[in-house]
Image (cartoon, rainbow, N blue to C red; front, side, top):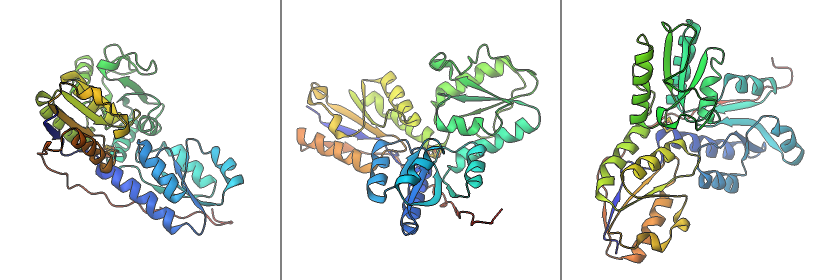
Length: 334
Ligand code: SF4
């Protein structure tokens, strides 16, 4: 029977996610008289968060600006769009302004930092190698959009081939091996990314790296906790949507160290998973709401009401300022 739960701390929402969700909630309230709010791409990669925002505030999520014309036929819209925490290519912002719409840029500042770095080195004639987990990931699309002519997408060395649009770090070719810079998606595996950069560094000894890793503090802290807890548990539960990059990396790391299950919510749990299990680890992605973790604890306490919960570690104190709202252009504005 389950005796003990090791609850990872920190877990769940990072500062970027909190900032982005607050920005949507506040704008939806403030603009409700003008119409519904539109969000470009899932504001954060969690189905429960997105469903709640749709239900409570009537926000519409679009993956392409061309979808707005159809929405306008059915709904009154506030002519303001929120860019998700993952960032956007500059072309999207330009198109929004051409449409005369306003926007709120909820891109995480740690993603914006990577955009600036990519722009800086591309403008100086460097080839930018961008390590990511998929060419379709919104963050990768956003950073790539800063300097598409100068950027080559590169796979993490453990995931070569999972997306054929990403080059193998062992064989990627660049026009000038003396002028190469490397940047990364913020949510990759710390260890696998370090190793991938080592491979690139051997091939391009003058490789320029960011002064501080692009992998964000929330990614590192959540992965560190999984590595600390995994040796103590027979089963690790990772609460994440399957398309959350940081959440899936937590699941991969936990799976490499012990038996692990990915769940969206407590409704996915199966009683037989806990047969012969005494110690359970729990963590959650940077976009998973805490109440979903608490529901898992309720489920486990039904199995053993005297369950011991061990929760060591520190909560993060980082906060990001809410982004400002850029209003729509009036008719006649430039
Ligand atoms: Fe920002 Fe990191 Fe959170 Fe992504 S996971 S929103 S980069 S703090």
